[in-house]
Image (cartoon, rainbow, N blue to C red; front, side):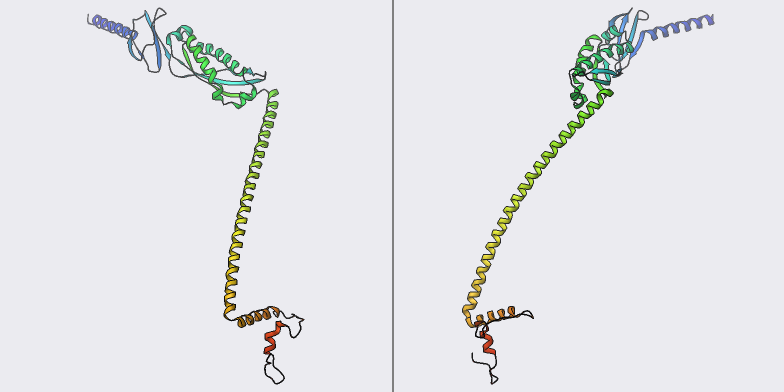
Length: 299
């Protein structure tokens, strides 16, 4: 009797545990969920937390709501001038409408990737087809992918219930038959730009040099003018001083000038002057020479 009662309690507890495990469920903050009744969605976008459902009749499908990455296949696209480029890209996408996502993909992430891949390929093919090769090389990749990202986001929200957050280019390669021509064109373009920069630099250098020469001439002219003015003022002051000294004692001033002239004339050892004896140059020397009596002459 005791064993039968214990067995009954165990069975009841097992049934209660089974009902609880099949009636209660938890939606994590990183998930999106929908409630189904025999495959039909009856509750959309269930919020995070603990929830209750009917066992067996109702089921819950949960989807990862975090940002997901799809590495697309490497594809060959033609540019506006019908030149081929090989593009490797990836897509960042996220589930935003669980009901539409479930109806379009049955909640299968691999199926969603298979549906997203051709849309991305078509959008990139159209984007590269409207640009020439020079624009593709010159433009920043973030700017290049702005249009496809917006286009795919609007399209796939309606079709799959997913948002395209970003489309990025990992690598753009050129086929071997195109690489040589592109590299030559790039080299020619860089050489042309280098010549333009050098020409501009030379022009700027000539302008700076001309301005410097002009300023130099102006400064030299101003300096010469100032020096001539100062020299003239000095000469005027010297002449005034000489004149004042000469007026004080004209005879002494003449004698002093004659001494300076003698000193300058007889500074060397081989100086030779050919002058008449009564020349005025020797006026002070004649007065200092002794006569036949041994006295200085009176001349």
